[in-house]
Amino acid sequence: MSLSLFIAKRIYRDTKGDKQVSRPAVLIAMTGIAIGLAVMIISVAVVIGFKNEVRNKVVGFGSHIQISNFDALRSYETHPVVVNDSMRAALAAYPQVEHVQRYSTKPGMIKTDDAFQGMVLKGVGAEFDARFFRDHLLEGEIPVFSDSVSSNEVLISKTLAAKLKLKLGDQIYTYYVQEDVRARRFTIKGIYQTNFAEYDNLFLLTDLAVVNRLNGWQPQQVSGVELQVRNYDQLEEITYQIAADTDNKTDGLGGVYFVQNIQQLHPQIFDWLNLLDLNVWVILFLMIGVAGFTMISGLLIIILERTQMIGILKALGANDFTIRKTFLWLAVFLIGKGMVWGNAIGLTFCLVQSQFGLFKLNPETYYVDQVPVSFNVWLFLLINIGTLLASVLMLLGPSYLITKIKPASSMRYE
Image: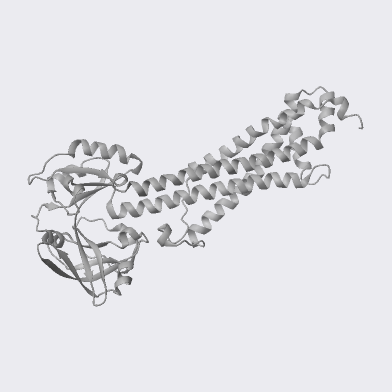
């Protein structure tokens, strides 16, 4: 064991009870590290959890990639494209694509005896992946969707049901304006709630056959096709690959294919989520600064209190570098203890919040009803390593104070 490490351990033990060491200074230093690290862990966990929740809800309604008609971008009306079995098989053959499903939409209105509400009727086929809506289902069940038979059953959000005073099993009348007004009656088969107001206030899910019949399309025509990818981190790469093979190609009935991913379809939402990363970086820098400066204060106090010991070590032949290493090792011990407490606080919060959801949010503002947390092992390790390195590096400058201490002056009254 090196001399500097041995002496640092002795001083560290003194901080626990020796009256010559300023106990409050040590506690303040360790508390600063603990609080700073806990805030960083909680901030990162909450922001990652929030981004994942919002992103998953946007993706749940529209999948990762959509292929639709290019003309639909320049019109409020839905324009169809041909999506036959061969195209679906070709899209599913991409190794990065996990699932392929068709959809069609039709804007309309729900009318009851005393209220009305605009909506978009979304039709899906038998291949529809209903896991997202099953996870957010409150009442009833998911209808059995079809592209050939009309069940006249719909899945409606709790928000719309509450506005229109509807309940499970009620029959609703919907109206669609074309050359003349067309009406369609549905039965509420299930009620879901995602707390994502932009979609809960808009979509009703029903059979693909119903929407295609309302639009007057041929059997192979749909509004588009949705693709789910295996790895979200490769979304841009997958989008460009599929776009290179599909974009601007014409189907057999004159429709032009156009490929967009969910980030391109909803840039305002994802830009907002990306801004949260800036907030996290600000919090990280502030907390590291707080932790570092509290450690600097504590270390300076300990150095001043150990001035006589430093003078004795220098008189015995110890050089400045060895003594500086001694106090830096001491700082590592104090930082380590503070980090243990910080990790305990941060991880306990994440565990309790994920299990019990103690801290609630207004879903109309934040799209979630409680503070979401998501634990990432690699980010957790990175925060701990970064905190330790940043704190030690910030102490290199103050440790130069040791070089200014002269043995003759420090030992004068010994």
